[in-house]
Image (cartoon, one colour):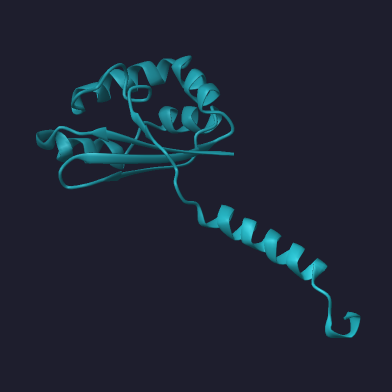
Length: 128
């Protein structure tokens, strides 16, 4: 599963309306996102308009292509494009992807693997 985090800039004078529109996303848009593999999808908005999005998917390219093929996404992206500054393309493809530098579960799993190996190869006091 890929974890995808991205950033966009909402125009400061449009933050209130952007927030209102996301309080009640079109039902067909919600279904399309779900059906095309956008899982655990969240948006976070700072008071200055910095928008951070996060979702999980099996394939970013497939999730984006799946949404691009839906009529509802074409309408939604056209309706949302006016809210963003410095946007090249539609919001769902013009975002800046952020690099993941830390994930707790990955590091814990790696630590558990090292601990398991250490335990398997550490002689007990009676084996010395």
